[in-house]
Length: 115
Image (tube, rainbow, N blue to C red):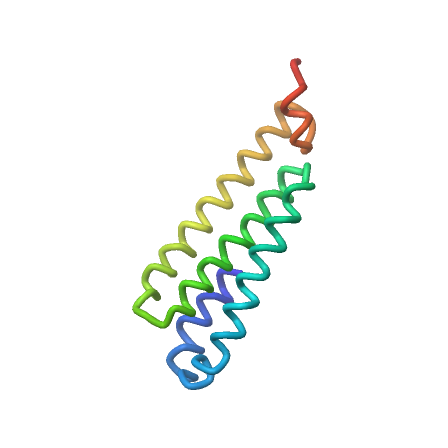
């Protein structure tokens, strides 16, 4: 996801500015719709790694929405994408540690496992 976003910033925006301006409203609707659908779907999710993956999708859509604004947000979006890489890898390492400690990937298992 981050490589595609970087490609948008470095290739698509400089080369296809008119096309980007034409497709930006459609991308903004898709981005907002994706954020809403994934967020609603997260209410029923019990697996920690799936929760991290879904929040990763939402995080990247926020970066896309920042690119669609059309102002000088490219540097902020690059920082968001770099921090996304650090945060997601740290969260996956933490979920691996929780799996080693508790032996389960289910959120409910962390709450009620008193061993």
